[in-house]
Amino acid sequence: MKLMSKTWVAITVLISFTVCNAQIKSSVTETVKIYGNCGMCETAIEKAGTIKNIATVDWNADTKMATLTYDSKKTNPDEILKSIALSGYDSEKFLAPDKTYSKLPGCCQYDREAKIEVKTEPKKEIVAEDHSEHANHSEKTTVEAKKPSASKKAVETNQLKAVFDNYFEVKNALVKTDGNAASTKAKELLSAINAVKMETLNTEQHTVYMKVLKTIKADTQIIANTKDAKKQRDHFDTLSSNIYALIKVSKQKTPTYYQFCPMANNGKGANWLSKENTVKNPYYGSMMLSCGKVVETIK
Image (tube, rainbow, N blue to C red):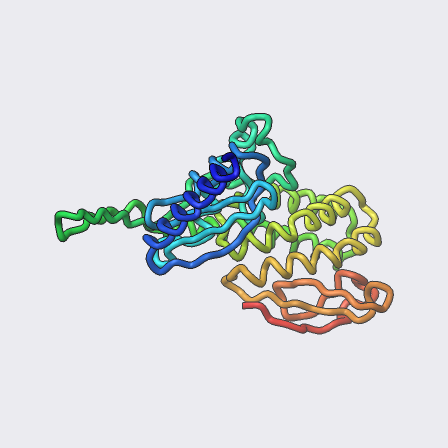
């Protein structure tokens, strides 16, 4: 009897999910990882990501995987995941605000791997349609356009510009083999990194920033904590590689030159970024100031 009851519940859920998906036009399905622990998490996650006739979320507590089904003309996975993050649940792309996470029931507080928060409401273009069986009309209400405003784009640029500008200052200090200045500029770079508001970045920038953030902060901290130019240069190599990945997804008003010295890093070679086309080597300074070449111009 119990087996029949469980089977009937499973069939009912399946039918409901199928009917719901059938109501979503231009539907696209994707699978993503969302962190949580239990049935309460499942209810909260699915409620936060579901929009009637536009998007549904089906989350599995065992695998932590969620199936997103959505109308690609009216929303997208990022908007759904932002809504879920704002309800307290991290995904691999967007993390819940600390305050929201801390208010989750004890059984729902999963292990967290990072501390980069979504702080603002996701911007969506949602059109709610109400089709009556007795009338040939529909009501359409635009909630909010998802296209970034000019002011938001400016914020995106300014957020990362401070990071890039301070990186170039560290590079200039190493060109002069000035460990004191490099340490000071690295502290300013670290402040610029910590000041970045993740919610202002576009999706591509956000994705890259999350991948490189930990290493960028670690290298910058080491450079800031020493005044030994040799030690600073040892970490400037990996710092430059990660800043390069970030600047590649960020449009700049002026070109940036990716340069390479084959002698650096014990003959393995090392790269750096410069606002100048002329090579000024930060790994050797005046010893071999012009050693290197431009390998890429980033516009």
